[in-house]
Image 1 (cartoon, rainbow, N blue to C red):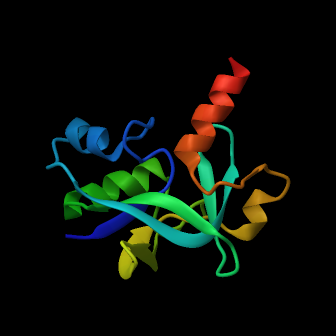
Image 2 (cartoon, rainbow, N blue to C red):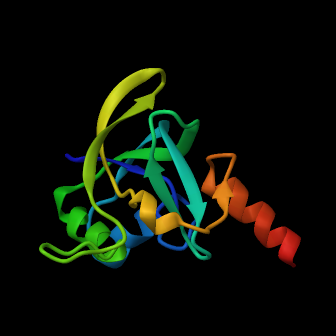
Amino acid sequence: MPRVFVYGTLRAGEVNDLNAAARRHGIAAPTLLGTGTIAGRLYDFGTYPGLVLDPAAGPAVGDLYDVPEALLPVLDEIEEVYPGQASLFVREEQTVLHQGRPVNCLLYPVADAAVTGLPRIDSGDWVAYRKARDTAAA
């Protein structure tokens, strides 16, 4: 089973919840392994975050899942990653820390040039940031 690191709207309870996406497509549920981190900077695109990988940055927080192979095309569709087409997100394999150990995972970062002028999410945690932001706006 592929292992994925999700840091934004694919996290549990978010708009593109990985479990809900699997159910909608009749695919077996992914297995949550727990929380992980990767060195990077999160940015607020409004309704979703983008992660710029950066070894000098603090940790970005996300969830690690083992997912059925059939779920990968669904994730690519959500992230609008299509073979041979330029897109905001790319799917790549990176090392994420899980319980202090390195784990290879697929994830969907963005290029540094894509975040120019966007607010940085200093906490590195999209869910906590979004909840605080949405509460402040209400």
